[in-house]
Image (cartoon, rainbow, N blue to C red; front, side):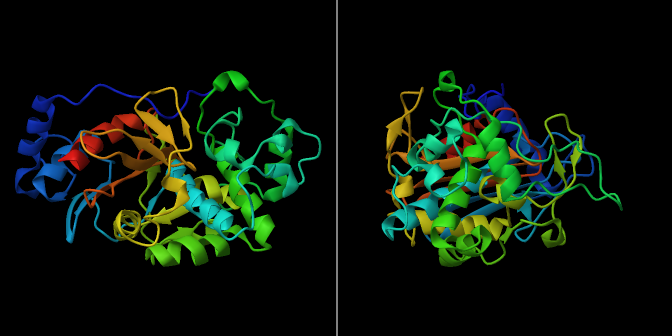
Length: 357
């Protein structure tokens, strides 16, 4: 059984941050890895460099403070596409909240009312249980495994379609002991349930109701490998091995969006004071095992020195991404990285500190 994806790591030592700043001075690295190119704001580079310790690492980071946007890059720029990985479910949460507002679904609706799960235990789960990480569904596996044999031509097979998703969800046992466990399988079911309720494809629905209003003009819902954008950063798994880019199929609501830093900044603005600032997805619905953290519809909230910050963080498909926003302060931070990590909170903690100023 995979460990939950949210954990609270120790605070980064100030000495390490100072060292990273000194290494970032001048836009290049003074020690190994020698072929990294660091550009942008030096304070942000200190944080970016903490998670980019190998020559293969690519990172994009931004701080939105009112009308000002500060950025930093490790071998990337504002137009480099990154996978959002598990943070994709934050977009699915915004879509779910929108569908609830429209009266198309309700938070207490059974997912089995929209998806053919038969008499499987998963059919009785509500959309709210799935979206607040209390479904009891395991984290893995998720569709075609990453190490599946390559298809003809050396292309890794896309993740499965809706039939495979439903078969998988119908075959797994619920594990109530998980208590609070972010699950990509749960996010996939939520997104496909909303799509079924509206009679539209998930990718079209997300583009129309979330990506376009947020101004995420470069974002792609990567349902098929044919949609992989040019210049996509090479993703790496937790061991540092390359992860082949491939379509996410019916699992797109969980892991299937690719975006640039410009897109992520647009999302941050949309949450701070734009079309999603009042989204019910961002409101606390339930607590978690951590007293300072509550959860809405996939989005979590953490108590800071000022107002609560809302955030989504996830690591999957070779990428790690995080979006945090303090709406009262008018600030947001976004991080995109081409490396999975076992505990995404290890990347989130310094961003929370940055958000608090």
